Length: 378
Image 1 (cartoon, rainbow, N blue to C red):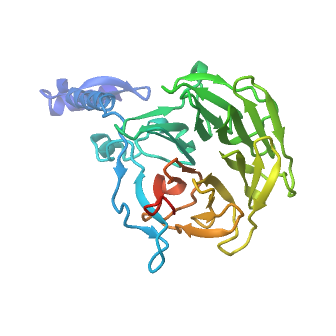
Image 2: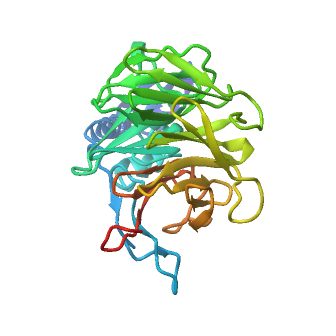
Image 3: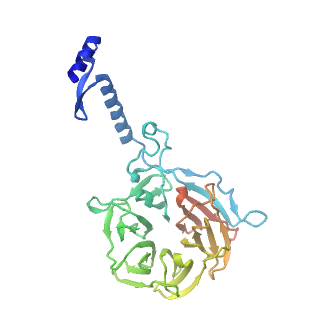
């Protein structure tokens, strides 16, 4: 068959026959134009060089609408205002590689130049830490330079599989919980793997919190809270599966403020408050359809006045309660516009009462601020 084809080509265009070469394709010899082959390798080589020379990760802070969106609306005095958001971590997807491969040309999600499904957020100094389980990484943004690097590598070429939460201690060490690997890992401030913590009995670590030399870990499927001493490695725990005081039904996010540990008891639809030794103090929240109720709460944080901010994931809003559990205000609603949420998860409040919310399925972090008067009161 090949010989017959060669005869036909040679008979019809004898001078052009030698413009073709024979290559083994799918087990058979096929005629290929050398110039087409050259073009293929030229384009392929260009793409390799282009990708390898891609610009470094740089966060793109979107300040459109800053301080123009407030809650509550007129005629009430505003208490919360929108500041900015971030979702892109590099050039917008309008490149040569997109022409050939589309916007999702990055085969490895850890190299994605935008957030996928950010679930938790934490700020320490000028760094913003974003846990993104959809990209199997924790992204670290320098808010001064907007430089970005990602944490995902473990020892022996291992990787994070499902990071959930992140906290940073006073030395700059970074603690990340991975619910799939069922461990808490420690990285240095450059993002290099240091070690994993040996917490016996830990089943599915979720939320993390740091206070007074202790690391607190919420074990979601173990229905317990672990406390580990960072200097002596001592470990204690409290809680069990149930609905009573000090019992949990899939605890998720936690935070510590002024000697109090706040635990999101997600499937019991409530917040429980303890001292740092695990002693029960109070609780608030019930399932229901009023704004004061909670439905699958997730992130929890506390501002400088002791008010408690709870992410109500199902209702797509953040609810603010006073220390006794009385609803004060809520902000947000379902949507993708500024100040709106789609199944948000984590929340963090810094020392200046700026509020960082992981807007998970809008693939972004939104930042808000507690409005204060001249005396510093909200």
